[in-house]
Image (tube, rainbow, N blue to C red; front, side, top):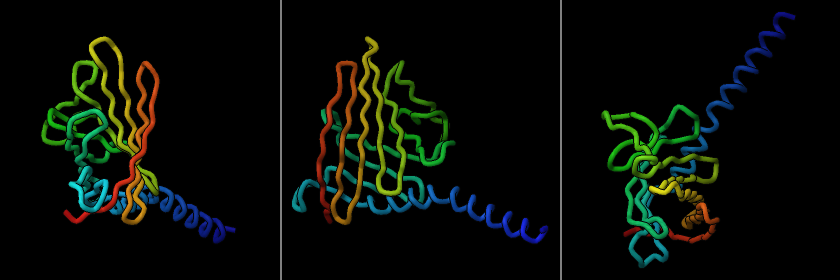
Length: 171
């Protein structure tokens, strides 16, 4: 009986370890597939660029109706959730280099990301001086040399959705 418990205990431990490591490997797969430059056609200037190593990454793009942004993301205390950094500080608490957190109730945009096995989701939250908000969720799903970027935007007035397909470009 003792031998069976030892085997079952080791099997349970291996299964638990596999479950804990799965999000990290899924994150790496989705992020690796996103690396590079993406444009609306092979001859166009890139509209989105991804780079990084491991579970940290950077992305440059122009949000719908906004100005170009360069964001850095690094792991947070929650598995599969990454804190965003833009000029002015980390969006979710002090993390590296002594930068303070961005507080969207005072000013600035809160950025974060999460990963799944097949996509990376980028989030941004802006709160205006009247208490209105804009919450954007970009679903970035790579499929070979095509990247589908789906925007789900929510505001106090309602919501909107759009989708764009980008292709990998060498420029």
